[in-house]
Image (tube, rainbow, N blue to C red; front, top):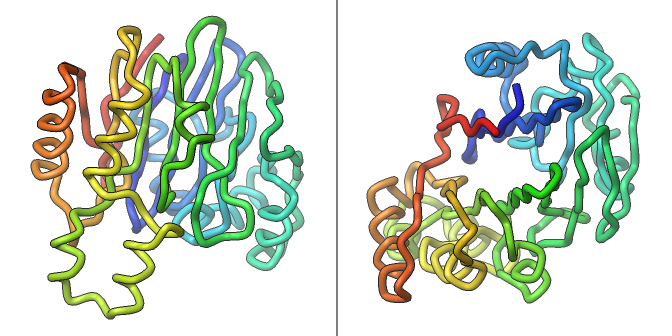
Length: 257
């Protein structure tokens, strides 16, 4: 399938499909292989047809399926060197690694991939932009702070997937331990709804067609709160934009190109 679809998004696991005319990629693999197969099949993609899995960082909600994917399907794993070293601690089978350098673009099949640095509590976490011909897609989640670099790379995208993890008041009011609250709210944690809104407004241009709101906390956020907060901020800036939620337990809206 030539298109884009978040298959799972949130603390219980993350996976995204992106496909061109020649290339089928999975971005992260943080749910079970059984769930991956079911969700890929629902959008018309067989897991055996994946050309590679692209890993953003080594947290378990992004790599849970890798041991089985490597052992049973021998799917190549694309990661930077620090993340690859961290992955080896979780795997009994050595993957077919293809190592990229953070900050340097590369081609995999007919997709141009650009991994860029983000602020998160792992060794060398990255977000990505993808180019297929004239189309540009940005995927940026699991970051605690929006840097100038992030804004720069997410400009001129046709489609975006941006983290909208929490509402700070709900984090403070939650039953989570203080160490969790401190982490989530830190510059190495996750983006709030307001920070997500500011980022979208900063990179908005007339060619931006749709934004997925991603990695929503099930305890410290709600889809209607995220949508309301972000729409209100965008409206105050004179921006009318198609927003949708990237779901945790089911595939989200499929984009076909």
